[in-house]
Length: 569
Image (cartoon, rainbow, N blue to C red; front, side):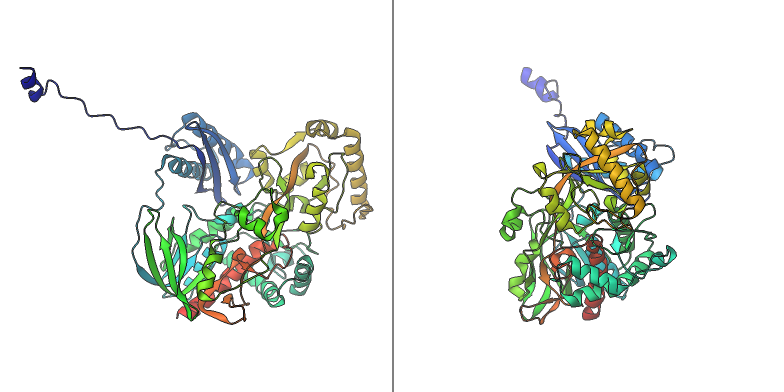
């Protein structure tokens, strides 16, 4: 009888409830499009709960900070995907961009990322671009302008941008319309001399000449795509203001990525994320495509008439960094996780070569605790550096290697970047640091000194002495030029950020010529293979000037795309 009742359904068990998705511990990233550019967030999960959300890069206005903070608060409270919540009044686009970025990171933490769901099979196209950062997307857009080509961009990560997402400073160029409008006298020749001097004369002259001669036209081209490059600032090692960035000094990287993503949304360009290139097809006679790993681990081959390598440097591969520069052991890295130098292992099979791999740059001003880059533009707009005794110790606008070495000589190898409200008001990118809680603030210098633990009298004396130098136009202590002393730093409130050098840029890389052909060790080109951006070596020499990195990726990315298209046709 009991058995009969069970058969009839009286003993039927309820279907098990679906298992609720659990947030996986780790650090997850996501991007979204705000009003002014790409917003990149980093989300931390501990104990299956979201414990922190940090905006790593963005170029929204000061007035949008409330929207950014509000979306972070909502996500921390909800501990789940954000739905169609009401946007913060007056900042709808920023709010939506934050929602998209946070939700992408949460989906990744839940294992629900859309990236890599498509499993690709063997195929062919005209041009493969490896890497969807600034250089890769510039190359793709440039190649597409030739028309009637199928271009596939392969990105190993689940999001676009690479190190370009983190870039803050700007694009160096000489003789631009923006400089003329601002009354700035500059020339490609002066740009060339500054770059060679900054690189310790180790730069490949032909690569520098090409960079400086094409930079102004590339700025115009980007402007035609919708980029705002009307603000021109000063970076260390430059004789004049030539670093082009959006109005108000907002971060160049997020803005540039927004422009390039929009320009890449056109017929002829396909972007595949979570598709990792694991090798090149071909031999010493030329490159005929790439071997690619899908997100599920399966492998396919993509035949192509031309290949552009734009995978970036190897600054996040600390083992590789220290193999070339053992002195950098123990240094933090400012690079995104994908900057691991994959491309260098592919070269042997096709005869490609590398150059100057030992030239690795440390940036002097990384926030000491969280290792977040503090752009050189803060110093360019007036900030100074003081040590734990409250004293200046270097010309803050010297080249990065000189400033980094000077900081490392101070107690604990650290310093404080000190500035006032006039500097903060002049540079919108500083608001990102405020949003990340990286700055100490006080209404007067005595209070600021107490907050950062340095002698009040010494800091006050240092600031007064600097103000006098600024007024006279002569820095009697360290030779900072009058052009570089843009503010007396007398406007309260006052701010400080604790900084120390960190691994920033790998100047060495694949050997290329001025047309971005990949070269063999005998300087002959590998047929069908091009490269651009930080993955290449020779243009920066032993030290890269601030603003030349983004110039490199867009100028040479554009050249690589043009020449790959010509070769493919």
